[in-house]
Amino acid sequence: MKGINFGRVILGGILAGIIINISEFVLNEVVLKNDWEAALKAMGKTMTGGSAILVWILFGFAVGIGAVWLYAAIRPRYGAGAGTAARAGVAVWFFESLLPSVAQLNLALFPSKLILTATVWGLVELIIATVLGAWLYREAA
Image (cartoon, one colour):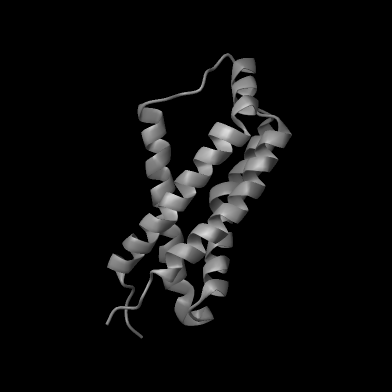
Protein backbone atom coordinates (compact mmCIF):
# COMPACT_ATOMS: atom_id res chain seq x y z
CA MET A 1 0.00 0.00 0.00
CA LYS A 2 1.39 3.35 -1.02
CA GLY A 3 1.15 6.56 0.96
CA ILE A 4 -1.30 9.39 0.49
CA ASN A 5 -0.65 11.63 -2.51
CA PHE A 6 -0.69 14.98 -0.72
CA GLY A 7 -0.37 16.96 -3.94
CA ARG A 8 -3.61 15.43 -5.15
CA VAL A 9 -5.19 15.92 -1.71
CA ILE A 10 -4.45 19.65 -2.01
CA LEU A 11 -5.70 19.78 -5.61
CA GLY A 12 -8.93 17.95 -4.80
CA GLY A 13 -9.27 19.94 -1.59
CA ILE A 14 -9.05 23.21 -3.47
CA LEU A 15 -11.85 22.08 -5.79
CA ALA A 16 -13.90 20.97 -2.78
CA GLY A 17 -13.13 24.30 -1.08
CA ILE A 18 -14.32 26.27 -4.11
CA ILE A 19 -17.59 24.34 -4.05
CA ILE A 20 -17.96 24.86 -0.30
CA ASN A 21 -17.28 28.59 -0.57
CA ILE A 22 -19.72 29.08 -3.45
CA SER A 23 -22.36 27.08 -1.59
CA GLU A 24 -21.79 29.02 1.64
CA PHE A 25 -22.08 32.31 -0.24
CA VAL A 26 -25.43 31.25 -1.71
CA LEU A 27 -26.64 29.98 1.67
CA ASN A 28 -25.59 32.96 3.77
CA GLU A 29 -25.85 35.84 1.30
CA VAL A 30 -28.98 34.76 -0.57
CA VAL A 31 -31.04 32.09 1.20
CA LEU A 32 -30.48 33.07 4.86
CA LYS A 33 -29.26 36.67 4.57
CA ASN A 34 -32.37 38.25 6.11
CA ASP A 35 -32.55 35.61 8.85
CA TRP A 36 -28.88 36.16 9.77
CA GLU A 37 -29.35 39.93 9.83
CA ALA A 38 -32.42 39.66 12.08
CA ALA A 39 -30.72 37.19 14.44
CA LEU A 40 -27.59 39.33 14.71
CA LYS A 41 -29.63 42.52 15.15
CA ALA A 42 -31.46 40.89 18.07
CA MET A 43 -28.01 40.32 19.64
CA GLY A 44 -26.89 43.88 18.96
CA LYS A 45 -24.43 42.71 16.27
CA THR A 46 -24.06 43.33 12.55
CA MET A 47 -22.83 41.22 9.65
CA THR A 48 -19.06 41.26 9.39
CA GLY A 49 -17.04 41.92 6.28
CA GLY A 50 -13.48 42.31 5.13
CA SER A 51 -11.03 40.17 7.07
CA ALA A 52 -13.83 38.10 8.65
CA ILE A 53 -14.95 36.99 5.20
CA LEU A 54 -11.36 36.02 4.37
CA VAL A 55 -11.31 33.80 7.47
CA TRP A 56 -14.51 32.04 6.34
CA ILE A 57 -13.09 31.55 2.83
CA LEU A 58 -9.89 30.03 4.24
CA PHE A 59 -12.04 27.87 6.54
CA GLY A 60 -13.94 26.57 3.50
CA PHE A 61 -10.69 25.57 1.81
CA ALA A 62 -9.41 23.93 5.00
CA VAL A 63 -12.60 21.87 5.28
CA GLY A 64 -12.33 20.88 1.61
CA ILE A 65 -8.72 19.79 2.00
CA GLY A 66 -9.57 17.89 5.18
CA ALA A 67 -12.46 16.11 3.48
CA VAL A 68 -10.32 14.97 0.55
CA TRP A 69 -7.54 13.93 2.94
CA LEU A 70 -10.06 11.81 4.86
CA TYR A 71 -11.24 10.28 1.58
CA ALA A 72 -7.63 9.39 0.71
CA ALA A 73 -7.12 7.92 4.18
CA ILE A 74 -10.22 5.67 4.12
CA ARG A 75 -9.97 4.75 0.44
CA PRO A 76 -7.84 1.61 1.07
CA ARG A 77 -10.52 0.25 3.42
CA TYR A 78 -13.69 1.24 1.49
CA GLY A 79 -12.35 1.39 -2.07
CA ALA A 80 -12.10 4.24 -4.52
CA GLY A 81 -15.24 6.00 -5.66
CA ALA A 82 -18.14 8.24 -4.91
CA GLY A 83 -19.52 6.05 -2.10
CA THR A 84 -16.30 6.33 -0.14
CA ALA A 85 -16.12 10.06 -0.85
CA ALA A 86 -19.70 10.46 0.41
CA ARG A 87 -18.75 8.61 3.61
CA ALA A 88 -15.84 10.99 4.09
CA GLY A 89 -18.12 13.98 3.45
CA VAL A 90 -20.64 12.76 6.02
CA ALA A 91 -17.87 12.21 8.59
CA VAL A 92 -16.49 15.71 8.07
CA TRP A 93 -20.02 17.15 8.25
CA PHE A 94 -20.63 15.32 11.53
CA PHE A 95 -17.68 17.01 13.23
CA GLU A 96 -17.65 20.33 11.34
CA SER A 97 -21.39 21.03 11.23
CA LEU A 98 -23.67 18.68 13.15
CA LEU A 99 -21.91 18.72 16.54
CA PRO A 100 -21.39 22.51 16.57
CA SER A 101 -25.03 22.95 15.52
CA VAL A 102 -26.22 20.85 18.46
CA ALA A 103 -24.16 23.09 20.75
CA GLN A 104 -25.59 26.24 19.14
CA LEU A 105 -29.14 24.92 19.46
CA ASN A 106 -28.49 24.09 23.10
CA LEU A 107 -27.27 27.66 23.75
CA ALA A 108 -30.29 29.11 21.90
CA LEU A 109 -28.22 31.96 20.49
CA PHE A 110 -29.80 31.74 17.04
CA PRO A 111 -33.25 30.65 15.84
CA SER A 112 -33.61 26.90 15.39
CA LYS A 113 -34.76 27.31 11.77
CA LEU A 114 -31.54 29.14 10.93
CA ILE A 115 -29.28 26.51 12.47
CA LEU A 116 -31.25 23.54 11.12
CA THR A 117 -31.33 24.97 7.59
CA ALA A 118 -27.58 25.57 7.64
CA THR A 119 -26.91 22.10 9.05
CA VAL A 120 -28.96 20.24 6.43
CA TRP A 121 -27.53 22.45 3.67
CA GLY A 122 -24.05 21.65 4.95
CA LEU A 123 -24.66 17.91 4.70
CA VAL A 124 -25.56 18.14 1.02
CA GLU A 125 -22.75 20.65 0.41
CA LEU A 126 -20.08 18.48 2.01
CA ILE A 127 -21.13 15.31 0.24
CA ILE A 128 -21.08 17.03 -3.16
CA ALA A 129 -17.82 18.88 -2.47
CA THR A 130 -16.06 15.76 -1.19
CA VAL A 131 -17.23 13.59 -4.10
CA LEU A 132 -16.03 16.17 -6.62
CA GLY A 133 -12.76 16.80 -4.77
CA ALA A 134 -12.15 13.05 -4.52
CA TRP A 135 -12.69 12.76 -8.27
CA LEU A 136 -9.32 14.55 -8.68
CA TYR A 137 -7.52 12.33 -6.19
CA ARG A 138 -5.14 9.65 -7.46
CA GLU A 139 -2.79 7.44 -5.45
CA ALA A 140 0.91 8.22 -5.70
CA ALA A 141 2.63 6.54 -8.65
